[in-house]
Length: 254
Image 1: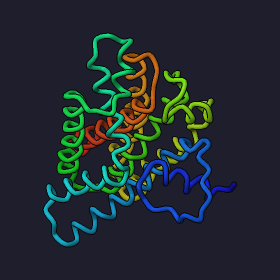
Image 2: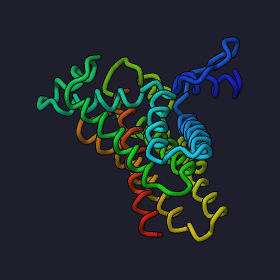
Image 3: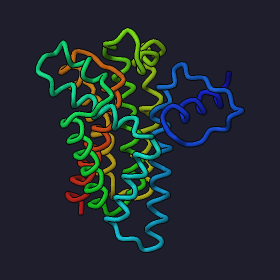
Image 4: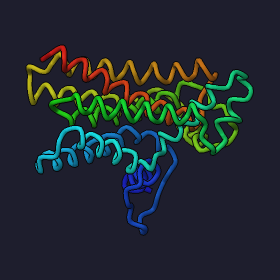
């Protein structure tokens, strides 16, 4: 199978975007393409944001619609993982955490985390005055790069599960280097478009690597490894964390 089958599989796995039913899908190693899918998602959200701005929609309303569309495009895949992870971490007995995370019912902590994540994305998008398309691409891309790093670096805690096949297919941190270079090029693009924005571009690159890496490390520290749910949590918290950082960088540079 070729590149098209792998890209189509990545789109089908990570998003709700339509894929032609006649295309073959190759899911093996699909996580390698997750950061690229993040850039695709961020780019589509940026186009939507630009369209809404063109019809003079207020920034807060735009930000809400972007956040809602963000969830819709991914089918809530990662947000659901963040909610299940929060419910698991709320359990004091470490041996019961995986059992609680596997429960499809959402608990109070999961709901609170979902609300917090959505509010963080809405408020940070509202506060970002320029280059929102770039912020969206960076957040979605670095979030999924953090997931890829977590897959490679840490043990998978279940013999089976929705994230097990990722771990089986990807074994070397070198496999995260191509997408790392691609994401760093976003900062290069920002400097090329506006050289005066180099401090924010540098902060976005360094912050993207640091937040993505440390988020996965924190969940590994708390749970002793990763599951499909924590992979989703890494995506969501990296996205929100990087957006928060970008608001600070923008405010300090204005």
